[in-house]
Structures are given as C-alpha cells and as structure tokens.
Image (cartoon, rainbow, N blue to C red; front, side, top):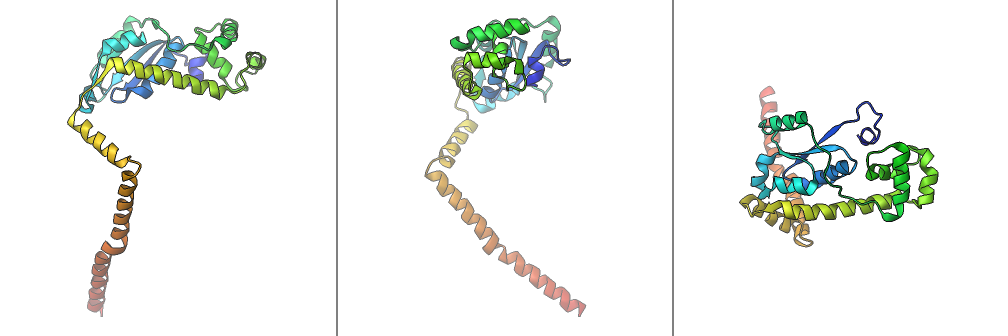
Length: 239
C-alpha cells in the first residue's frame, strides 16, 4: 500500500483516497488520514459505524472535523448501508484537494526535501520527505542526499513524526469529539480502573488463576467419578 501511494507510475496509484475510520475509535484512523492528506491526495474521511458512537458516549462534530482536517467527512454505516450513496455522490462530483497540511518537515531537512521533490516531480514536501526516509535499497540514488542531510537514523525521525501527529490528533479530538457519560462507558471505566490497577489488577489475576486450578484439580473430580461409575456399570452389564 505504501509503495502504491508513493509511486505515481504504479498502475494502482489512486487519484482519490477514501480513509475508512472506526468512528468509535478515531485516533488510529486519523493518523493514517493525516499522512494521506500530507502526501497530497484528494482524500475523503468516511466515519464508519457512525450510528454506534452514541453507545460509546461520544458525539462527533463532522463539520469541525472537516474544517480541522481540510477534507470532506462522510458518516457511514456499512452494515446498515447508510451514507454509502452520499459517499458515491461525493466521489462522482469530484473531491477537492486538501485545504491544509498537518506535519511540517524539519527545517534542517527542508532543502534536501525540496530538491528531491523537484527531481522526482512529487506532489508534496511530505512525499519527498518519505523518499528520503525510505530504506536505502528502495532509492539507492538518494544515498548521497541522505548523507548530506545528516539522516543517519530514519527511525528517530519517524518516531518524532508519530509523536507530533498524535499530539495534533489529541488537540483535534478535543475540539471535534465530545464525550458523554453513558452507562456502558461508566461500567467500562470502572472495569479498567480495577483490572489495570497496579495492585488490584494482580490480585484479580491471582484470583482467576486460583479458580482455574480449582476447576481443573477439584471440580473436575466429580465428572471423573461419574465417568468411572458409568464405565464400571457398563462393564458389569457386559460381563
């Protein structure tokens, strides 16, 4: 998938990307959506399972998401076939280019990034940045540019990018998503507090392990006795 998005000459290279997000757990999907947006693709964010967010104590402001992301947002439910027509209509009408970007290339790498963008005719600085961070075997001709830019460990730059993006996502969710205290959410929070407690969680684990051993070594004795009794009765009838 990454290579398809990076290489414009790939036969499967898309003109429009629809990022299907789990509306009940937006954070991972927004990370992908922001990266696709920054690559310069015409992008649509489809909030799947949008009809379930209320059960999780969530309220999503779709217009705020559109404004903050700079791309169209559509509520869908694949199981109930809702929002699919709106999504198809949007794709048929034409999806606009993203109205904003969400990650700034480090200043020290900007000259190298712009040089790569110009050399390869790429659509965005972020795409050129991804070329520079690619493993050397993918673009061996960029080895000298990487060295000149001081890119010794691409993994550190990638980790920093993910941290920056998740900070941005947290700010975005704080503005576009409102949490309400639904009964199921309160119960889930209580269970998490008990099971993930640094002391209480271990006590619960030990209790569960004790019950498992009891079930195996004590409670299993009763069906074993019934089985032996049945076998003995059957042997007596055969004799």
